[in-house]
Every structure is written in C-alpha cells, then in structure tokens.
Image (cartoon, rainbow, N blue to C red; front, top):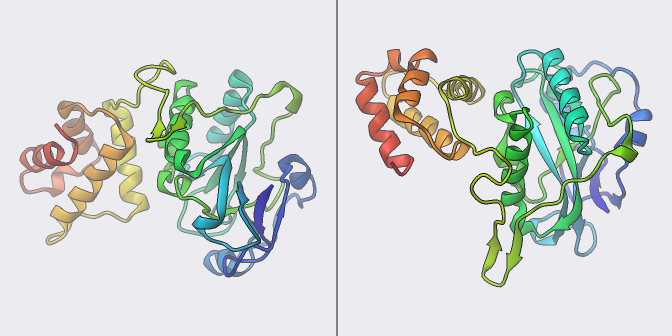
Amino acid sequence: MYAFKKSGVFGDYDVVDELDVILYAESLPQFHEEIEDVSEFKKLSAQYFTPSNLKDGLTRSRANIADIQGIVFDLDIIDDLKEFQQEFYRFLISTQLETYTWLTPSGIGTGNHKNGSRIFVPLAKPISTRLLNQAVDELLIYFAQSGFNLLNYGVDINASKTVGRLMGLPLQKAGTIVPWDIESTFRYEVKAELKDSGFVPLMTGNTFGFENKSDQNNLESFISRYCEKHNITFNMGERDNNLTKLIGAISKAFSTVDDSDLLDAMANAGISDMLDHPEKDILRKAKRLMNK
C-alpha cells in the first residue's frame, strides 16, 4: 500500500491504496490542460504518492514510514526528450525490468527544469528505510551498466534518498511510458541487507559489471548540468564557495575521478577560464573533498 496526497503538498496523507500505474495512466487525458504557474500547481493542485507503507494512520512524517516499496528518480535536465524516451524504450527491451516514466509538471509547463521527467521502479520486496541510500545507489549502477546513465539527465539523487519524499503522479498519457508486456517483466530486488550493526551492502566491487567511475565526457556532462540546474556561477567573491559545491557534488556522483580527466572536463565546461589559478584551485579542492 502506498500513501497518497490528492491535492497539493500541505498536510497529512489523504489515503493509502495500491498503485497500478498502467490503469492510472489509462484514466488520464492525452494532454493535461495548460499549467500557467508550475510552482503554484505543485503546491496546491498536483497529486502525489510516496511508495511506502505507513505504520499508523495518515500522519506524514519520516517516523511513520514502515518500509520502502519502490524507488523514484527525478530527472531535471533532459536536452532531447525524444532521445531520452528512445533510450528508455531500449532499456525496457534489453532488461525487462518493470519500470515507468512520465513527465513532471515542470516537463509539461514552464518550470525550472528542462523536460522534467520521473522514473519509477517498484521493488520485488519492500526494504527498510535504512536501506534506501543503498538501494538508490544499486539502481543507479544497474541503469548505467545497462547503458542508461541517469547522471546524464540531471538526476536528483538526494530526492530519491529522502524517506517519504512526495513524488508526483502522471498528469497525461503523452510522455508516459509503461511496460507493454507486464507479464514478461521482473521487479528489482535490492541486494543490500540489514544486520544488527546496520546495513551491509552485498554489491561490492564490480558486481554489476560497472563501477561508478568517471571519464572526461561524463564528467563534463555532469559539471555542465549541475551548474545549470543549481545556477552555479563563478563571479568574484563566490568562486571559492561554488567550486567547493561543484567538486563536492562530483565526489558524491562518482566513486573515482582521475585528476587529468577532472582538469580537462573543467576546462571543456568553461569553468577553468573563470578561475584565477584553475589547476591549483581545482586539484587542491579535489584532494580535500575527494579523499585523494
């Protein structure tokens, strides 16, 4: 059972129920009516869910979440929506993983995100809230190993790892993609498990045939998208703080980063030109923030 909000973000949950995305999508109009004010719509009108069992009643709080039954990824920067959707189709065909995608209000109206989209992955077995971080990391690597790197689309990892985070439901048929043969799909089962001392990740090393390593191209893409999404600029008086934010974000997104790749990516993304001592500044912060 999932927890739902019927109209806007304020207050407790309204109801708990099952979620059949295919049936829900079939009930939607082909196109949603025009959204004039995306921010106002999200606050007061949009319908939301959190893929979680509640412990008691409809209280909306982290403490009332019993377990997690699905993982949701918000993608904020999709330059070419058609290309993204084709890549999603290829992922469905090659993996047969039960996965769904739909446009967010910002992807339909005029918002801060470019073709904002949401990916929803229901889990084979519910997991403890303490495993959410591991589950998100596992799925990011699974997607990337399958040739579908969500880091290329401005994925908001922090939102995915926030227990009880409200996630908007589909608004229209257009842009909503569901498995066409649900009986042939399977649900992802999280590999990490809990022990008395806390969670123990079973996915170590190269379990999925992929490690979240960087290269110059995906580093450059990540840097450009991160700066665009978070309005990161390098004017006088803000360079040090914003370079710290950027390299801190890189350290969270990639398990290993080669110094030469980092310098080249920063140069190609136009960051180096805005720094007083680019090589010195970048490598000094990388050494401090990336445990080099």
